[in-house]
Image (cartoon, rainbow, N blue to C red; front, side, top):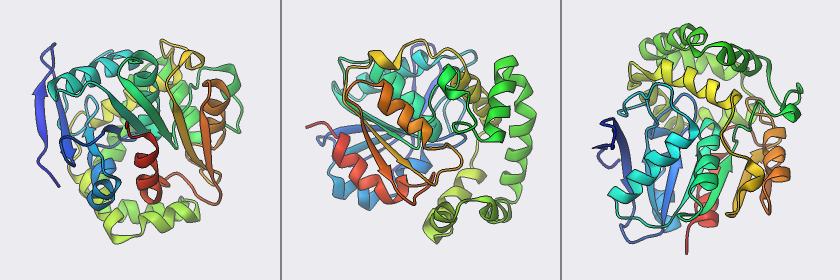
Length: 290
């Protein structure tokens, strides 16, 4: 794994990322899930190299080595990414977002149309505030609860994520293996692979002190006003979603496909939330700028 680099943004916050692949290759910015870090989307170095891209995986504010950003919006993330691209002297690039990284990729597609060549939404979260998303078909019970609490105050969510973070930090292997029983079979199979399990354990052990606040903030963002209409996105968008996903049901992917003009939905039969592990090469090849 390449070294993690941290830069100072215009407001003084630190933004961390890893950079994998040739500097002159097409650039793809990859955004991790909730909670998580750059490690989740950058560990498959051989796949990334074979795809012929330069993958830049940043930590979102409050995760990994990036400074927490109080009261941030999805538009703030698009601005952070633009500053990182400027720092790296990258004019045009693609973005992909996995799970909770999905709304952040969508924000870049909506708000940076002159720079984003294409966007990929992988098992991504759709706008919970949209009336169409209120059905149980779109929200599993725990996520529905998290969104409702986040809409009142993200501070109500922090104790939940703090407890989760404490357990994962102290007993990551035991907690993750115990959680396998509650996962759909496709996700349990992926997470049981030694190389994938090792990444999730490492991610848990390295979690920053502000990760619980960042996770609570993410859910507040997912359920709030995104600040733009997905119907107005004009760049090419590809969506990958498994029909066995119980964490973020496939209705989220179908929502994006119906609302974003020209979006292409790649439904993955029999696959679940962690499908990015087996489809990363395809995803990168599809969205990479030419």
